[in-house]
Length: 508
Image (tube, rainbow, N blue to C red; front, side, top):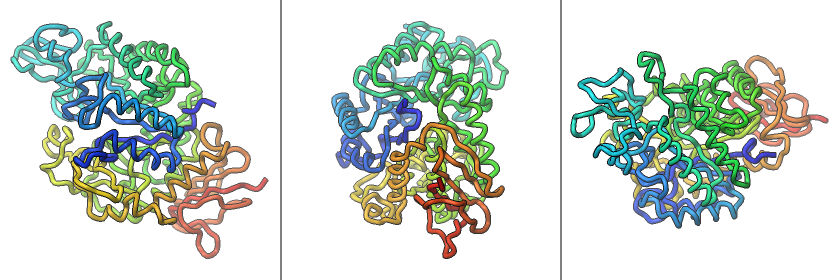
């Protein structure tokens, strides 16, 4: 079976994962030292957010050099050692590729400002910008060049000029970048803003003429030919926030991307009808192209799900990010224990975000002067941005930290939880390692079980079931030969409490 169809993949945000030299910033030395933690956790691969040289105008998604490592993180030699050490532990390595835009400090953009190679980007000469496109971080998507003579397009921060993918030089450069890292042993790429490379300037007033244009698919077909020339099943996973499931599935045709993030599930509220609807829609969208779904609860761009699940409205929406909303973290953690059992037992692969295995919540109360997310600035300080999910995770040997950790995170550290069989960390280890042992989990079919409208339950293979009780009262489990795992204890009568999940070995 293709390894990626049922893998458990762990996202590392390098700056906030593990600090190896004590300067308060995560680095490759720290990550290399913590690889045994990831192996014990039971993950099959890691995905690293950008590790390239960057001025960090947008957390590293403003890349100044696609063929090197950010000096704060380490060196190219260390990156190669990391790949080899991860492989020795049975962990594959996926890295971020950022093709929609680069940094304004990238040599190409500096050359363009000096008049050379301007057609690698989108420039417009004139007194006014050519259209009213808006940046996805807030404000206009066009900024003046430093000399005031032209406008340039940036769908994100002004420090992130968009590349012109109609230019064959841009296409050739990125295929060369892919080969550079594939030659160093990376197992795949997560493609940032995968839907955004092609722009349609003939429709300036259309809703999103810079998203999901038909021409983007030929780019990925050519990328897939590059990838398929390498052995050992290298893979692509796309980041696309698309409302149309049929258009989403087009990216997953056999000669394009292997998989893409399933954000409908991430945004879904903790409600049985909505969960079933999103799961059904996801499976239906992926079936025609034979691609495996992905399931993800948190990442570096969204509110951590422990916080979301502890709120009255447990959904997620960028347009109404609920900072400083009343949150019951005990409830959120109880639901998070059940949620990881749900996601890891659904068909396909699952992504985890660093720190969720510790039950970390969103840090809403960071001092404003420490916030670095461009969303905070470009929204006029109305959207507090994404820094709250990027606070460095606690290991138990804490030194300085580029964003301050809450004091109570000491009790959530890896060291504090490692000896506690009831901890979130112990639960994640049990879930992921049991998932790995069973051949009826990962990729494959599923069948719903009818245990009432407020219970989400399904069968995998012939002898496994996941039961999630979202009703207001305990419920009886279906006939089974044994309880494999629960997210919390059954009650005195053997019933499954509210907000609790169980994995069952079904009667033969």
